[in-house]
Image 1: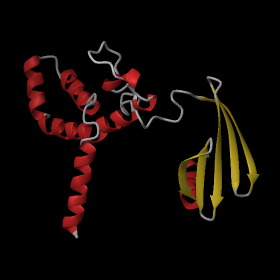
Image 2: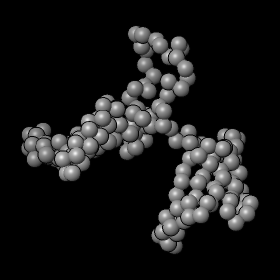
Image 3: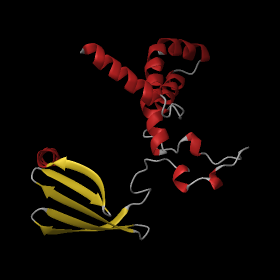
Length: 179
């Protein structure tokens, strides 16, 4: 059983590592910044670098497997909030974007808000099992968020598309932490 679990974890890590390993390496960059700021002498910085070698290994692995993959698939780095390097506007040698569907020109998992902020939101309880929120963003766009309770489950829809699901128990736990 342990062998199967180990193989599954290994395959999952390997597959996720192939999904966007190129990125800004923000975690490693923060360690490097610390390394440079620790002391003002280049030889002392080399000594600090030597001592931080194991930390660099861990941060490089974290960047490679987790943060750069998140950066690739969402279009921006979760630590620095900067756009992915592949979305840089530069003069290119080969132009293909004009021949592709627009959905293939941007990161596939982008936040619903796309840099919009909610200006106003009006919550209406339709009945004991459903709520509806009319949202107006700061750019004038609108959306409707609906929540439906079905037994112990709650499903949320944004403009008719399922965006999240949870349970009453999880909502209660969140509410108890908020108080």
